[in-house]
Image (cartoon, rainbow, N blue to C red; front, side):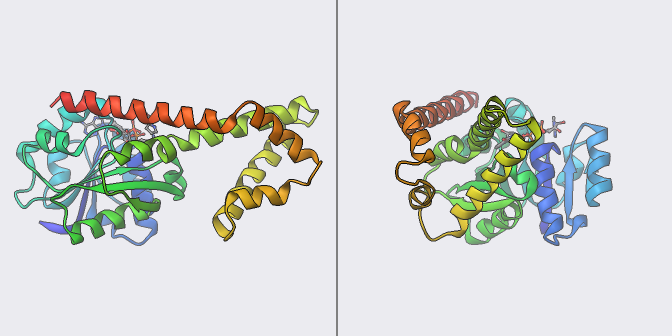
Length: 276
Ligand SMILES: NC(=O)C1=CN([C@@H]2O[C@H](COP(=O)(O)OP(=O)(O)OC[C@H]3O[C@@H](n4cnc5c(N)ncnc54)[C@H](O)[C@@H]3O)[C@@H](O)[C@H]2O)C=CC1
Ligand SMILES: O=C(O)[C@@H]1CCC=N1
């Protein structure tokens, strides 16, 4: 077994993001294998990143020290049980990015209590600006954590959580989170058009404002509440807009929306764990 060799099972969007980050970080492309049934995706991965792509997982898995499970949760059971007899005998580290599939369920499907790192990335990983929550099963040692960090850090910021249940909260905040910010951008852009701006101007002003606000929030020592106050002149325009948000209980709405996402993540995990 080679600890350097990584086998991606599934070569879709999330796998491509992680591979792009690894290769850009200087990870040797010949140490990365992908199992992907779609021939166009296989060819694209080989051509673009120089990795080796196979139609069958058996070939991708040979000698791999780390498996990265990047298939859809709905087919995870079938993929894992089919792979189980062909896994390298030395216990490989398994990194799963599959939403809602508990560590013990994956271990059950793979037929062995392999060390599992469960990761919840988000789509900005595609531009190496992801936010990724990680949890390690009891079997993962310090070297395994380092290996998982190498793979995920290439796609963005990583944060470990100490309890697997907290992955459901990570899902509600950063996993689904890009959709919340995109919705806010859509609404602001539409509002700008309604106020008379041409669509292109409204779109560009919205995007740049989102980028600028995020950059300030990340780079500043001040919390977002202080940055908000800096924009808000007493008796001015921002104050009026924020009053409308407060009247509609925007904070309460966000708390309810994220609790609903967390509850859905819990329910999905329960369904998939009952599927063992
Ligand atoms: N999109 C998102 O925001 C997030 C996605 N995820 C998780 O990432 C995982 C992958 O999602 P995406 O990359 O968006 O999906 P995708 O559909 O782009 O990729 C899945 C790939 O698996 C391949 N596949 C199908 N059967 C296979 C098999 N038997 N063996 C190997 N590969 C097979 C498909 O051809 C496809 O290319 C999912 O489990 C999802 O829950 C996690 C966090 C966020
Ligand atoms: O919406 C979903 O269920 C997945 C999990 C996080 C982002 N997309």
